[in-house]
Image (tube, rainbow, N blue to C red; front, top):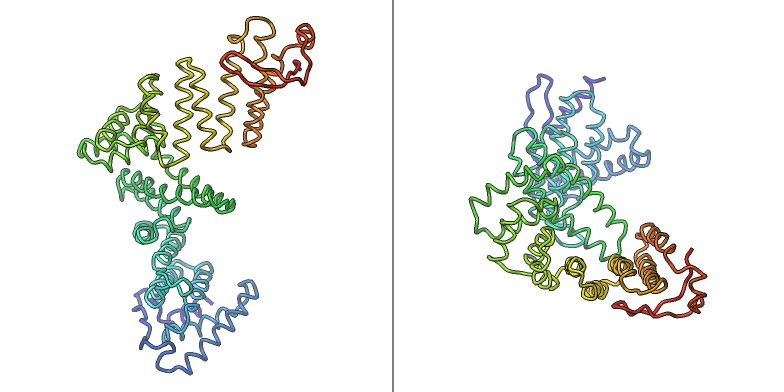
Length: 464
């Protein structure tokens, strides 16, 4: 049976192997520039036959033997009229993947893999433009080719890497998720096998995560939950692959050398600060050097943000304020929102609570659906409770407004529900007891103004 199968394969002339193991020359389609080739009647007949047999195979859920007849007719179409239909290549790849899966030995399997790669190249040659959109599909096809090569022949990771890199260069942020995943897997394997330096993996990670983050943001803004989750999963996959290369010691070692060689390279400074920021390598002297150098070379709200964060981490709160104020002007609204919260935390550390609340409220103004600023203000109120009172009652009333803020936080951001409920339970017991309310002539449910710097109205409640 195996011998019979090999005889059929060799007869196809598709770059398969002869019995002696010598390679057979790849078959080049006979292309005269016309859709149906020199013998249009024969082409149309074979096209019809292969499609009919392919349909039977597909209807059997790709299980019956109709693939054999489909493959024979398909081969004739491919040979004599490669421009007849783009489906030649779509269906051809499907059949070849099946044959690869069913192969009984490595010689047969590798022959089919070589044929698969050749079919991808032919599709790129004859159908480089996506018909419906009239746009180039070369990058997308190279991506599929590279992914299939990596999957079917893992030892060819260097070749797969090069193909996938060409795809990414063409597609950029439009690249398919699997292309990003397998490109980075190939990059990591090259480093593991000694075919590339670890620095190459870090650079590839930096590049690929720009694409991934752009897609996560795009689909999040479009409220496309399914696609957002898909790209989040891709991000997690890449992060897991990068983990062995992601420690601060190796990252600093790699980038310190580059920084020493090109201390005035602004693009390099941006890359260093971004990846060390992402991997939380804030304690590194390199991070400090790169952030400061970047701000001096190309001052921007983004570089001010990095310096401000660094100073906050070093508890240099007063020095951090002007940098974080500048950072609130960032075009990235998510980061600008973060800058407002960092300012709020800075003023809290300086015990300047009214100013702390002011910046938390600015964060809410910028993003009303973000729960953290509400929770932050609740914490400010809770920590002020005993300081804002001069008797048993007034030392407890600030807990009312604190709980109000926690409830608001989980209202706008349901993901915070568990954390906020814990805080509410903690502070409910600090409310004034019923007898204390009675002593001061207060009734539950009435409005009460919490004074001191807080100066907010709330509802009277007894401890639970």
